[in-house]
Image 1 (cartoon, rainbow, N blue to C red):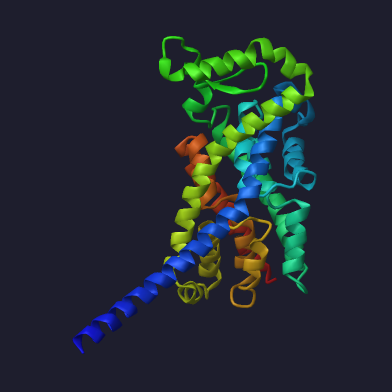
Image 2: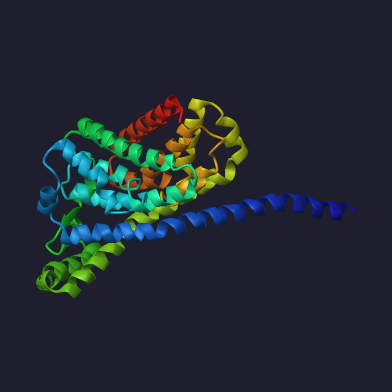
Length: 347
């Protein structure tokens, strides 16, 4: 009898643990699989910018007028559809190329929202509620310009990049970034990097410049480096996001989000924690329609693509911590204000 009770108790304990592990695995793997293609795409586009786009080209295509430049950056997603999973390495590359911070941040905020794939998925998710598409597109466009403008004013001409990103890398003529220590002949630990630098910048540089195959190989090599840089932080962010989803019951989240203000705060926190790609987050938001205020749904659709757990970690790996905290604070205030505006209007 005592033996049977022991087995019964063991089963009672094992069942919740098994359910937790199954739920954790499912959510964690789904986040990684969902984000992975876009991380690869972002790393590849980042490499293309590094290989083929010069600072002079970027400066030439961006309007000289500050507000025209912000307008241009906020609409570039219409022809450059990338979700927030892929935007951080591209933004880092643009800043390193000398693009003004207000333009780079506007670009980073707008592209994951103001792009045809995201707007189409939103329309498909909110069948019969097309106003959500217009709200998301217009408020995303407006918020990105406002955030970029404010960040530009507060940051000024100071570089937001970490010192190791600026000083420990140099760009050679073939477009690679190299650790500045890698060309020190006295450091045996970096000898393989030095050899690669010589291979890149020596006899093969001319081939890479004039030979398409050489350019392709260089781009792929740089993509793998960029992917490794960003991918490890994606995994950490996905892990933290999954822990939050599996430990906090959904009923608890719903019970908190009854009020106008509290529902907005809860949906913004949820967007930050869930870390869902902007191509698919509308389908999650649709499940809260009718239970949460319209403004809180808009807050979810704006805040999540602009910043979430995995993006915060990726940003912290490249940008100064003070800048990241300042950026997140501005994003939160602007998105909260836009959501309150929607609730105030009574949509």
